[in-house]
Image 1 (spheres, helix red, strand yellow):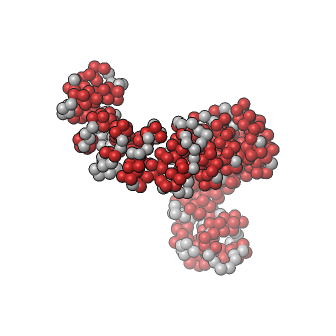
Image 2 (cartoon, one colour):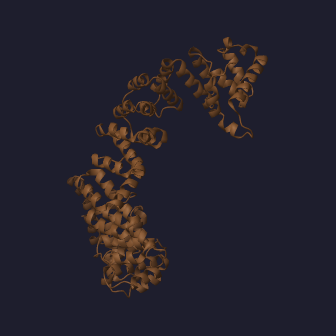
Image 3 (cartoon, helix red, strand yellow):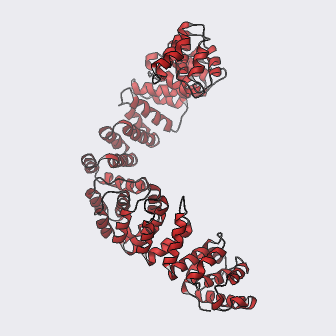
Length: 549
């Protein structure tokens, strides 16, 4: 029996798990001999499969499937039969092979493409038209083999489903083959093929699909640079720059400078970040000028974020200065927090010194939290020791406030007792709000309220309610309100109640508020609901609130 060379190669792949478990090597000659032996044995057991003229018989194939199922001999004999199958026989044989035998099915479909690519493509097209979601691995296999044999025909089939999600996966099977065999055709096809970010992510994550970039980066750069902007172009160029950066940084930089608006897809961010960090390390001033003068939009933000991240690792103090000069808003806060988090362990003295340069405000609050939370010791004594090493000022007050928050979490009574001795002006304006938000819910909930300074209790109650109770039902909120006696504390709670948590409707709130004996508290409910429901038509709102007037 003649053994097709592909049998030995593909069967070896299909039987990798079986062969790897054996204790002796199997060479092609021994495989061929065993196939021949199995063929003779099958001929003796089932004479109807002895000759090639009968190989199309479904009965013989069924017998072969049932004989020594799963054994090396059976799989080798199956592979031999598959590689002698003709186009007209393959649809029937495909029905006989169970879906669980993925290797035999893929081998048969590959054989079909070899002997009759048009018929195999027509079969794949029918499967393609019936798919609602991701394409099946079998169709992928057909299009991969078809792209090697006749890419134009494969592309023609895909074009019939252009714009549909189910065609995308097949498109990139063809693209992968084209880029290896004919990069110019592959680049043109890739630029013209609609694709989702998820499919491009899958494509660029496969080493084989970017092998063409490594093979001839100069040619790849020329082909890609000529394309109009698009995710395929930008994704490919970003990957190419990342590849070049490890081999020839100057060439990578030249390509980047040529296309300043290059957008970085999410799936290429890791390679791009490495390139940007190296660029910043080599020429921070030059890169900064380039980014500020030429980059725009998401590309600009991404490059600045990469510079800040690189400096956080290589030169944190320079990174803090650079962020102050070149970033703003959330981007600056994020960069500073990242750097201070690293300084907390690598150079806490430098981190403390930076805090001391900041004025009171949101930036200092965020920086203090990031720095303190990253310190090796996170109990209140460590924070108080840190504050004691700092000069008087906003930074010291912020660190002390963080210490009291930690202390409150450890022992509320002791922390509040000490806080009673701290001048109010030494605490940040938002201190009691922050303390209430971080506080654990106790039973009863207002257990420690009497220890909160009188001037801060309403602020504490409002923040505590907002953090822990605003989503409770009206009955539970009414119970909690009943435990509050101070008028200002009750007003703070009522204002939060009117913000209508998920379990409270305006009608239920108005009905409950009608039971309050204090007209001033009913008016607090009215004013709060007017703010919360300001989008409601005026007449409708007045009708809703009229029972409280």
